[in-house]
Length: 564
Image: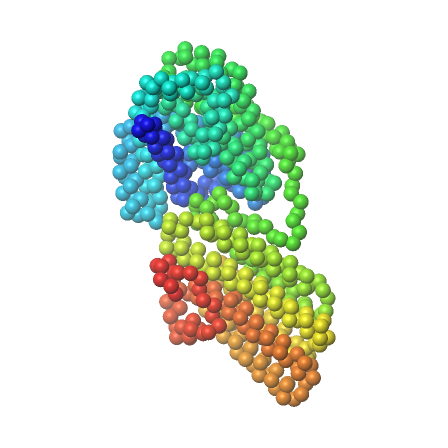
């Protein structure tokens, strides 16, 4: 029992090693790898080569699949180029399997020692993440040694021999086992390394090992399909084509016995025969299928037509799940989606102005629909940011994370406020059949125009972090408050003069001014975050603005963990 437990723990260590190598490479070079793939979409051979290179670095064809799927989903890459990249990814995985099964036992202690020192001493830096990669490589090599050591006593057990011998007569069962293990371990590379090590220990025969290798490749295709299930049809086509290409590899199954006989004449060890078969199988399959990417593109487009457009509720466009392991990319995606929310709120403001000046129903319907869109995108951004591993974020990235979620919350609250303001206007105009005075309408429109300008400037400051723009935004906030006070006084003066329209609409008029004041406070909150890291943020007037009662409270703790 203890021997079996050692074997299982060694397998777990192998899976964990491949995982941390993949995540470390993506966090350090994720943006460069995405750029490499993005530039390789013009020609099929170039895309194929890029797929080999990227997968050899991240040691995961599934990670490459996530990148390709996200590009196609966002319209940045054609399906043919993505399928060529996926074929190259299979070859890249096979090459890394060959490298990792070389005799590198002398290297494992060195890689582990250097990796731990770098990662613990400089965790939030690029060097720390490279230490994570070295640690993962050391663990992979160590795990392979431990698997060999744990498998030796198991091979002597009669019961285990009988168990593994049951697979010898059923190649398709071996394929199924390989696919299942690749899915459970989230890595076809780990599955191939394991089966090669077990074959070297004599625990399984070569026909079973070859079948498991084919199954592991199919398992990686299933993983990509499962990960793409939440993507639009364009992204799912990449996963479908990749899976179909891997299923075509089942054509080799009837020839496994002759291949085993031929491989035995070459004089290689069982481990080298398994790794050699994996490399030859993937290379031959992918090179033969590479000219068919155009045909596979048309087939996938036929099998997966474009989704019908959903009416009324927006879907996120930039929140790529594959970028979550690269914090800088994930934060950039969240920024783009949050700015999209800001554009929707800007449109809601424009429709609110239309609702003020005329009695048509269309502006009101647009505002309600847009508020639903804002709520949907806000929820998507919030959940996307919640999935990010904050403990791995650098201090600057944690600060940016907090700024994004704070702005998203403010914009969602602004959308709700605009919808409530619309309700007040509609009740006044339709139920009570009343309208604002001419001077009152001009004042509301002028205040609305200032509000729209401050929203756009606030989004610009959020994107750029420009201190000069932040100070300008605070000046606009003070100007807005002066205008708001002056207009409230003008309204009271009209009440004193007995203007009928002002008397009838007084309550709603003052409430709308107060609502716009709160909206302005939400829109201008980005200025404070932009000024936090600058000397200019300590001026007395800005300090007074920070203490103003209408400034929205910042979200959550600061990066240092203290409440603001």
